[in-house]
Length: 290
Image (cartoon, rainbow, N blue to C red; front, side, top):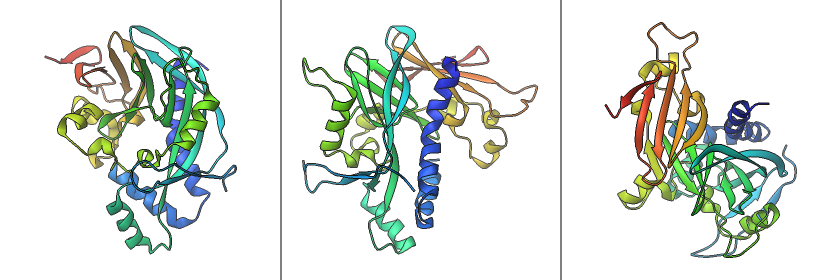
């Protein structure tokens, strides 16, 4: 399997894994998933993990599948050659971090327990010893500060940091990273409903966590889905590649077959430190900045 095919498979694994997890469970879990998807645009090896308290009562997370060996490609600043690493992936269930979202779903479904949501979690350690543990991302970038994750949402890129960071002079491996991930109180950071701390707090903090790019994509790029506002960036995503301090995201149109006047390929460069778009091309023609 070539590099591009593997990266495509990895970025699509998240949605497939969540779908399989829900379809194996009772129907009342399907509506919360539908709510999540619209808002954002039997399992083995079950294990309940109660985190140690930090501020207030801890939120539990429950692993609902066995850890699987998964390859990851990690991008590096200053080189366009990604690093292949071997890591782990599994599924967890966590409560909704936003009380309003949990209350709304309970009011709809009349559940007798707290509603839960599935989250795909990945863990790996690069050759330099930098660790990633957290929600599965579309792409990963190793910087001097650690691993940075980029996740394509419906209209933007959301940036995340690893929930496990190695201490000074510590030799980290995958098993140690998994153990620390399970022991720490981090379930509230696994809420994929879109109500996480990424979307709260000062505007400066939100600007660092979200990079809007939908306006840089041609309207007809998503084919028939554009008319219904159903086009999602992750569906058109091809690959990510580092170009100096910027990550280049490549997209290919969903229009099949493309119309003669259609834009077929879009490339967007984002500075990973400012989290701002620095360049955009449509079929090789620069459209931003003009």
